[in-house]
Image (tube, rainbow, N blue to C red; front, side):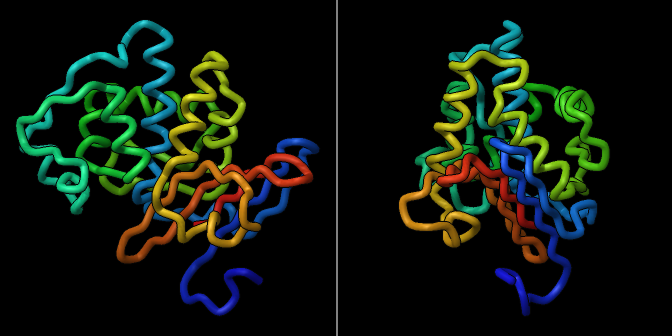
Length: 214
């Protein structure tokens, strides 16, 4: 009923992580992921840091090919072509203000094929991010956030650090707008001219919920 009257396709997944209750509407419909793909970049970055392949202090350079993806967030961040920043700072920019240049930079640093391999390891079958099409489903994105929430294959410190970043996203017109005031929401939104998504972990009185709306 929350999305009644909206035009186009709508998919919803709600999963109570405390007791396993699950409900979905058209959960396998494929959408353009938009910025929700950054959730996969975040998770793979922490996995590679824990394996010793990457380091949060690693210095990255914001080359022209990354700046070309700017949608207006670089000015807010005070970043320009040729600037350097650490991997940790790039992750924060990618999640908190949903900056795309740093997201593409991180994706190249981690290896796009490694991100898709990580998705496969989670049993995610229809969502792929090593492509310009960025196909994604609500079912897959809910599974991805569930893995982040549980800290699968990472330490408790990394799990909490990822959730801390997702709690700070400054775009607040998706799931976070529809939950009771004061309810914590760790989420990654994504929008484009034909896409409006939000993949959220909401702490409610009956337990934590994954709520994915695409």
